[in-house]
Length: 189
Image (tube, rainbow, N blue to C red):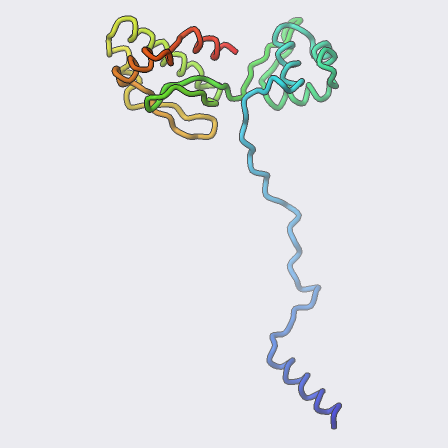
């Protein structure tokens, strides 16, 4: 009696539960995976020996000489160069165009600060600082007009409006925030 009771309970449980699919009927898992999310591109870190070796290559050293000077492998430097630059061997030297973001000073919302901007935007930042410098020299607001209502997106896609208010720019200049020697030195690095 006891065994028949167990059997009857197991039959009632089986009838109330949905039927399981046999393992042969399950969907095969796809081996194709989603591409990894692109990582944020960061400005060059000159404490990295690969970045220092790349700077040596820009000055005319061969890839092997630059790698040897920084005590890294030629393969590591070549991989780094391909990933971060557009480069060609032309004649007897490398022609390297650095595509990494660049740290530059900008003035926005009454402050001067440094942001990482895409390498394509560096000339726009330079034109802005030239316009600010011309405004401070001549006091003509017309120099700032092309930048009014616009700004720049940094490497993280955050928007920073240009500071075009004449009074704010004069205030920043009076407290030494707009030292063009410092801005130029920071931009050239």
